[in-house]
Length: 108
Image: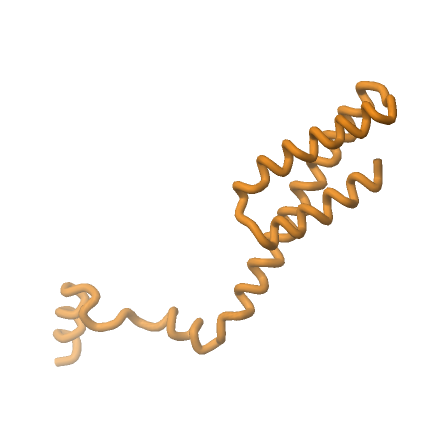
């Protein structure tokens, strides 16, 4: 059972890093079918098969969460500090006529 969970966690990390959340539903379906098939092939009890299927599903989702967090961190690190400063700067002229009018009045 531990090998299934470690494998599902690893697969979840890879899928979380590479894909969006919509890939998770078909992957969970395939993993649950594989866990049930492996349990039936080994002639396990029904509760054992269910426990493996639930454990593998949870490990896959936790792995996906870790992988998507790593992806968010990598994407965030690619943004340069100068780009961050520009995005927090004051709005450009011409964006909102009301604000431009108030800025022109304040400058007098």
